[in-house]
Length: 236
Image 1 (spheres, rainbow, N blue to C red):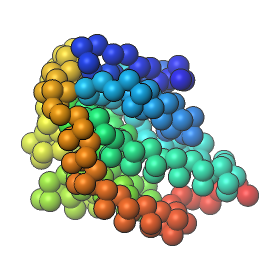
Image 2 (cartoon, rainbow, N blue to C red; image 1 turned 30 degrees about the vertical axis):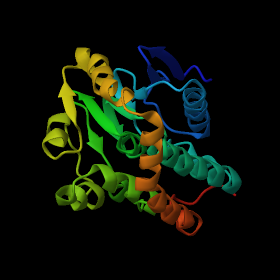
Image 3 (tube, rainbow, N blue to C red; image 1 turned 45 degrees about the vertical axis):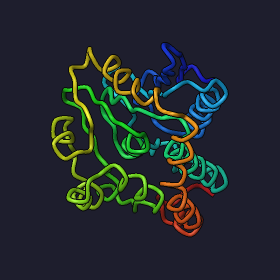
């Protein structure tokens, strides 16, 4: 497992921590490391999984400085891994809680929305789906994930208008479940995860799959056709 993604378990709750020492930008290596952590959770079967960032940053999303330098094949592989990893979290058979330790932008916001509950540290952090502000169209799989977490009243504002939210604003709109002082974040995330860990895990996994699998199948079928134009021109 990459040193940028760590895994620990306490009281039947696994914590996956994202910390590359910078902004937790998403690349193929990021998705492989997160995938390895998810693999471990599926092997060890904790009662719940908390996904947390480093202090001040959850994730800034895709590494948009790196991606335009990639060749077409590497770019395709990275975007496939992006979609598959986020959808894997969305369908993950074990209950998941996102611990928003700081900024969660674009892919970082999607990773949070893919989790079952969202706890955030209060402060100057920004939660934002900024794609339309930077010239990128949200793929259907991302819209599926975001719609599951954003109440209907705020979907146009959040997904089409790229509005940034402070943790407090996101909480009032229902995008976050809990906002706590930064020093209480991990404790609050574990407290949110504890009742989920007490549920019947077999029933939870089956019900979650039935709730979301049809939407994931629909969005996955559109992945290839929507990939063109997802990013600016890349190196050939």
